Structure formats: structure tokens, C-alpha cells
Length: 397
Image (cartoon, helix red, strand yellow):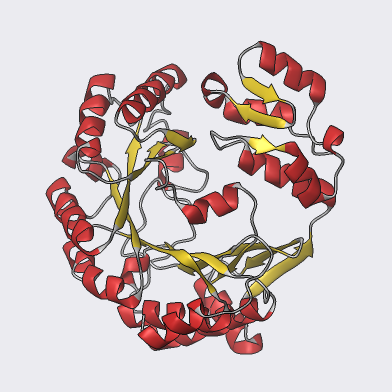
């Protein structure tokens, strides 16, 4: 990011009196489609970087025209595989954002990356472009598991990319997937201890889930792949919590762990139900009590931008009850829980209508929920049954 753009971003005399805005930019392309992935990702033989840069800039400008008065707290380049973007494209988008919004002094700019040697070769240029936090998709430190997950890199290449990332970025996180078929507590414990030894301050640790429409889902339907056993998955989850807590990276969200102060500020904006906007295929937004979603298929999104200067497929108002439910469903994923008075203010719903009080009392007596006045959180025991707990406590009517 050039010095002029950064200076302009930080020089605003008047900051909005609202919570910082989070900006998500979606790059939908991948080299190949992983068998577990249900994200909006697509494989294309060639990509016109200039065409996509111009379209993303136009889509971004549209969102900026509707969110004036905010300062930008975070930018997140997600995908797909954003590390396939030309660094010049990343820099152009950061500079454009700096021209549209004043930046928070500590703005977090994250980019997701795959750990191939080709993409690692771009890390220095991406840091120069303005990215200050990298999220690396290692997924496993075991070669056999990486082959099962359909990853293009091996463990050695992944660790080499991690070392390069730690050289160029002050903040680095990486992802691992566990509860794989046949994975024992000993195997996962060994791998997680190794991961915790690399010195990063943030880890995203996801249990393998079988998502509809994926290649793994098709294999399960044909009986060629077993769904992870819930009891074994629970044991692996408890082991994960124990080891990360001992290492000083406790869970601050169901699958995300960080040293205090190193949480992903962008993702916290989602979970705390701050306003956010999106640009690029399939990107979602929540702004001015409206939900927005852009066209998912890259070609459809591109055609919409060329036609009308933005890629929105749907934009609709959220009712007070919808806003309350979303804020609760997101916030109760966090270890910190939620403040019902704040959610009442955000949603225009009375505090006593937000949750099912008799059910909440029962869950509290079972040790699945903790409540102190208007503060509510799901306990560690409740997190193992999170979807069931949320389905019972959150009032959708």
C-alpha cells in the first residue's frame, strides 16, 4: 500500500460514532476443488486479472457509497484462494478502500493463502501491498491426511510456506482439520503439540464435517466414507481445548484459538454482529439493517457488475426478530457470550423476548449455559452440543 493512500486513510478528522465496519473481499478461484469444501470456489483455466481488478473495484465503490460515516476496522481477502490474486490487485483494492473510508489506526488486513511454494513466493509482495495478517491453509501436518483431504501441497512444503509467512507478516494464523477417519487421540495430540510449537498466536482448528454438495458427501452417500463418530469427535475436541489452553491459546470461539489480544478482529466483527459489507462473488453483508448477497457464480457476478456497477443478487431488510436471532446465533459461539441489553438495542426487540427463559433456566441447571443478569454464554460442556443448545434457546418467532 503506498504511503499517500495510508496517510489519507488515517487522517480523517472525524470518526464515525459507530462500531468499525468490516470489509470482506471474495476471490472465487482455486487451482482445484477440495473434497470437503463447500465454499464458493471455482476452477478456471485462465483469469483476466485486470478485468477482475476493475470489477472488484467497482463493486467495492458501490458498497462504499452506502456505508459513509463508518471507519474501516478490518479487511479480509477470502476465497477461493486469494493468494492467487496478483499482488497489484490486492494493493489496488486496499488503496481504494483507503480512499473510501477512514482506517482505524490498528486496521487488520488479512489474506487467506495456500501453502504452495508458488504462492509463498508472493508473500513479500503481499506484505508490501498492505496485508498485515496471513491465514495459511495448512489443514494437516501429515502427508497421508493431506492426500485424503485433496490438498496439493505436502507437509514439508506447508511448513516451508509457514516459515516464509512468519518472515514477512507480523501476525500469522493457520488452519488444521482434525477428527479424520481413523485419527486417534494420540495422533491428533502429537500433531497439535507440533503445531503449537511454531509460535503463531492464532490457530483455527476445525473438525471434519461432511457438507452437502461436496465430494465427501457423495462418498458418504455411497457408503465409501464413514461419518466421524460423535463420541470420538467429542474426545478429540476436549483434547484440543486442553492442549491449546495449556499453551496459552484458549478458544475464543468454537474453532478459533488465540493468545489474548491476537484474536481475528475481522471475525470478531461477524460474531459480535458489527456491520460488515462484502465485494466479489457470493459475498454477504449486513448494513443498515439489510442483508445483501452477491451473485455466487463468477460469470454471473461479473456480468452484473458490467451491467450495473455492482454484483448484488439480493438485498432485503431484516426484521427486528431476524436481527436478534442472528446476533444471538453468532454471539453465542464466542467464549465471552452475549450481552442481551446490547442485542436488544441492536435489534429493537425487548430484552425479555430474546431468549426462551424457561429453556435457558433448564440448560443452566444442566451446566450447558451460564447466565449472570443479562449476560449469557454457552459453557464448555454446552459447546459440545452447541447446535442443539442454540436451537432451543434462540427465539425465532
